[in-house]
Amino acid sequence: MKRKQKSKIYKLNETWTMWMWKSEVGPSYGNWESNLVQLEKLRTAEDFWELYRKLPKASELPVNEHMFLFKRSVVPVWSDPENLDGCRITIKVERQVDSGQQCDIYWHELVAAALEGRFGWCDTYVNGISVCSEANLFKLSIWVRAYNGVAIQWMIRIAASRFLGCNIADLTVHKDLSRNLCKW
Figure 1 (spheres, rainbow, N blue to C red):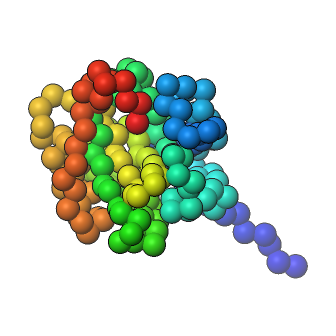
Figure 2 (figure 1 turned 60 degrees about the vertical axis):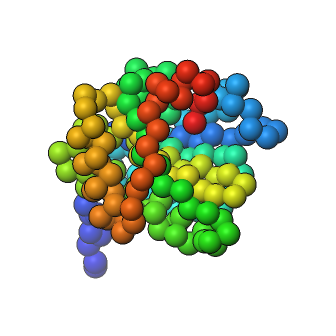
């Protein structure tokens, strides 16, 4: 008689929450929070990968839809106190140049990096990651909480550039965007 082996559970260093933003009819950004859906809180790697397999690939997201993976109870909105004075580091992948394969690789790598703590000592500053599908491109972003000085965002850019194998040049400061009432 064979013994059933107990599989090892890999507890994550942080609890993560997966979110989706679905536009009802076109981009209704004025109604941002009502279109934001919390999918699941994730405490183990197994929980995450089970959910990940059920979700669409990043490149399969319908236009104007978003996926987010955020720490703890941080909500993917600019007004969340953890996001308010931070920034977003963004990688843009043009649809005409890429059939979606590179977008999917980048999303997978960013997810793994966030869950595994590959941002090094800057991990505590990473609130989450997101992917957004637009008509002509995909935007993959690393959301960084409030920080003093530019060293943190540069270190996160360098770390992400290394494990993604690309140069990351786009940086958006949250409070600048919130003045323009842009929610993503």
